[in-house]
Every structure is written in C-alpha cells, then in structure tokens.
Image (cartoon, rainbow, N blue to C red; front, side, top):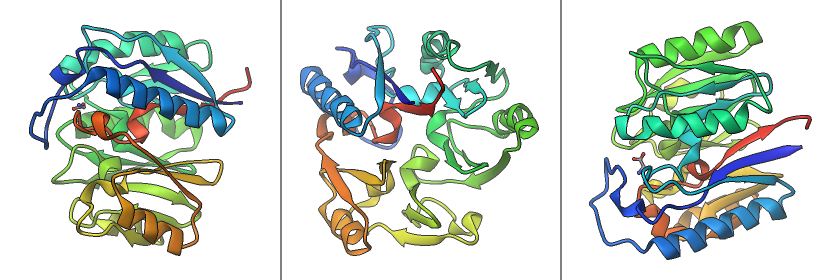
Length: 256
Ligand code: GLY
C-alpha cells in the first residue's frame, strides 16, 4: 500500500519561514482548500492519505515532507535547519513509528526532507541553508547499511534541492539549471524548465502521472510534448508560503 502522510494547514500559515520570497497577504482558508484538493488528488491516484491535525504553533508544519525521509526499511526523522520547524518532528515520528523503525538526525546535523531526492537506491541530498554536511553524513550512516548511496549536491539560489530538481521517472530529471549543478546527475537526461517559470521544477509523480502547479503552463506544455501524462493543481495560496508539491506530503510504501 502507498501512503501519504500530510498535515492540515494552520491558520497561522502566513507567519511561516520565508527564505527567497517576499511576504505577502495570504488566505489560510484558501490554502486549506487547496491542500485538501491535493489530498483528494492523491486519493484519486490510489494513495491512502494519513492526515495530521493542524498545529497553530507550527505555521510551516503543512510542509510535512521536511520532517522525515521514509524509505522502504526505515524512517529518518530530520532536524530541520530552520529552528522554528524542529518541533514539527515529534508528531511526524509518532505517526511513522507504526510503519518503520526510526533513526534520528542529531545536532549539529541539520537536514530537511525537501533536500532529499530519492532515485532508486541513491539519495541525492542538497547542501543548502537548511541541510548541512553533518546532517548528510548522519543520513549516510543511517541508510548505507540498507544499501543506499548518499550523494551530496550543491544548491544555490533556492530553498531546497527539490525546488530545483525532481525526478520524472526512468532516466529523466526536470531541473532549473541556475539553482543546481546538473553535473551531480551524471547519466540522466535533464529537461530544463523555461526561464520564465523558475519554480516549476518541483513536480510530484504518482502512478505515472506528473502533477505540476497550475501556475506553470509553459512547463506543462514542455512535459506534455515530451510524452509525460501531466495534471495540474492550483496551489497558488500555498506557494506564497514557499510551498512546492512534494513538500505537502511524505509518500511511502508499507505492508500494513
Ligand atoms: N515556508 C517553508 C519553509 O521555509 O520551510
């Protein structure tokens, strides 16, 4: 069974961390409605959605992906680089321990799930303002015995590695070449997002369908022309809080 762990939008969402975007007015009710439509889309793909309740003290907690890396054998609970986000991890750990053994990133390590791009048994991990070398080293120690390789990737100009680059399946990545050094991905074909849509590289592929924010029509056309089955979703209100599609869920497979 494929699961998605999600968390409902808090009415405090507008108070969350912003790194590369200017703060602007945000309607939490609209953000909630968009997040619920996202959950419905996952259900439509056959995913079992597990929803954590909103947490008023944790404005960014809807971006649940950052709190854990879930593999087939283990869940690694992160230590977010944004100190305000560290209290998000306890409830995510509590939800995941029913499915997998847990490992934990400890100080001085920092790691956020948005920086971890899994392709098979390789974890590409962005070195960013949120994820440091110590965190990457601890992740490697946790997953290497399970047969995973960890490959650091230099990222600049955006929040997370997966803001800059996501996997479309097989040997293809969608990337913004200004934010990530494609040489880290030797052997892959790279589709580049149009310059007018720099944030479009964060896609979510489930059951061979590639989900893209509705705000990126040129990237949608590029993906469709390249043979991908693309669907779009309006997450415009969530994007004001620096959301991407991947960060709204933790997708994992478990036997339960
Ligand atoms: N607002 C999302 C983050 O900065 O973590």
